[in-house]
Length: 161
Image 1 (cartoon, helix red, strand yellow):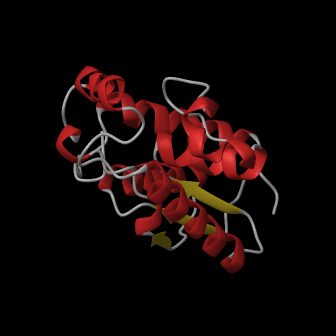
Image 2 (tube, helix red, strand yellow):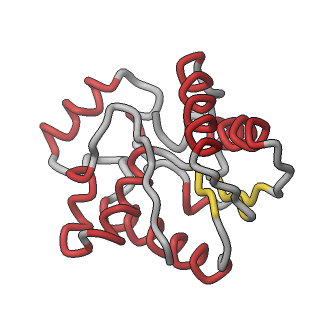
C-alpha cells in the first residue's frame, strides 16, 4: 500500500479486476476515456477491464490519482500504518498530509472533468477513490475522506458530470 510501492496486482487483485470488468460489461458500460494513476497495479486493472470489454482505449496516467504517500509506512503491514495514525493523528511524520492529498486528488478530478465529456473510467486506489467520493458527495467532510470507505476493496462508484 502506498504511492512509493509500485507493485503489480496480486492474484486477488486480478480476480477483482476481472469481476469488475464482467459487471461493467453486463451494465453496458463502454468507456471512451480511461484514466489511471502512475502505479502499475491500476494500469493492469484498466487493461484487464478493457480486454474484457473488447476495447482498445488509450490509458491516460495521472500522478494526481496516485495513492496517498504513506512515507516510512509504504509497503509495511497495515497495522504499522494504523499504529502510526493512532500515535500521531491523521498526519504522521513522513506521511503526505491529508490537506495535500485531497488537494491533489480534487485538482486531478477537476482536470478529468474538464477533459471528459463522454463515458470515462477512472482506475485508482482506495484512498484516492474515497477522496473523490467525498469531494463529489460530501465535500464538507473532505478532510475526513476515509470515512466514506464502504468496503475492504473499493468497488468504485458512478457519477455523471
